[in-house]
Image (cartoon, rainbow, N blue to C red; front, side):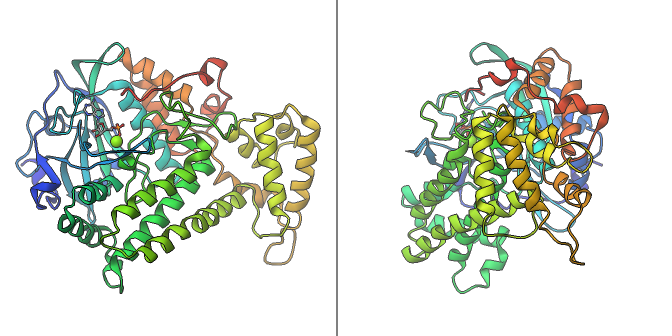
Length: 489
Ligand code: AMP
Ligand code: MG
């Protein structure tokens, strides 16, 4: 019996009118083979723990099961602030949909599957390098507890693909709760297909926000949900030092899941104006611009929903964004510093900390992790991260005396061990530093996938001490801080 007869596949997107997509089969690559298979995720969706040849045949497009209804989605979007009506799945496909045991449906998306009507000037392919980056980063984000699409597996091939140099085509199998982007709504609005847009909103509510259907204004509730989830996602990005790099509205999931990994970067040194995308000349998507850009993107979505939702309701929802973002971010920062309560002067401690981190260009991840170790390690370990040690020591004194004002249920001062234990659960020891990804890529391009596997395993548990992996938590070497990542993928 075929594996595909043992799982429940659905075709709900393909049951929508043809104005939503173009049916199209993946175009196979030469000599496709497995690079990696995500056993943990496979288990979650009922796939075999080990990849089989049958799965390779299905996912590579060599033998597409008849239950699949592969299609390229049509969407549009604002790229770097400019509306582009011509977007869509240009090198990806919604290959199939799978129902989980608890009745939820997940998209199985194939990235790098060949030309579609939306490929424009592109070749429909993805190279190994960028696919490894997406694989690793989506796993890293999942490990950090940040909502994200995930990668089920990765395949390489012998098909030449031309970027700045000749590379090889790869295929990434992406699992996501949805592939509906802000840009889907924008497409129907700007082409004046308002009945289709309403249908899309109805389906989004039915599939993802069923609780909104019972409300008085379901579309308003849907938009409120999108705003809220986006605010949470951005707060978490800022908390962990993640820069997405291409926050175009076609790369924004309506479920607030981190989506479409390209030239992303995690902060090494704390530099608020960090630009990870080498092609982002103006710094539109710089790290510290992300909260503002998400609001810009939500406003673009709001504008496109103006036929469905009244202006006042849209404005009210948008006004909530900043409140929600600040709420999520300050809650997260409080946890990162091990503070349970809120005191009037806390803002001063936070501001002074960010100021010191920036002027001293302190490693963002190391700083918070080191602060989380003060139950067993000397405070000198924190101070030594700064150039200006006098100021750092002063800040630390203020911070530690603030910690001593935290009382537990019995009214006793919270012990350092208690505080630090909790802090270690929110301050990762291991993140996907750019140079670590680059080493895994260089090896993978030589046909050695062991580093990719090791990193993927490591990043599943970023908050745990992993003594045998201590070297992955080191500061990046100088060459590793200067890597330039462009949009070319
Ligand atoms: P991205 O920057 O990866 O989010 O892609 C933006 C748009 O360009 C989307 O519509 C993609 O489908 C399309 N695209 C990106 N790379 C390619 C490619 N190599 N071939 C065809 N379309 C592409
Ligand atoms: Mg995209």
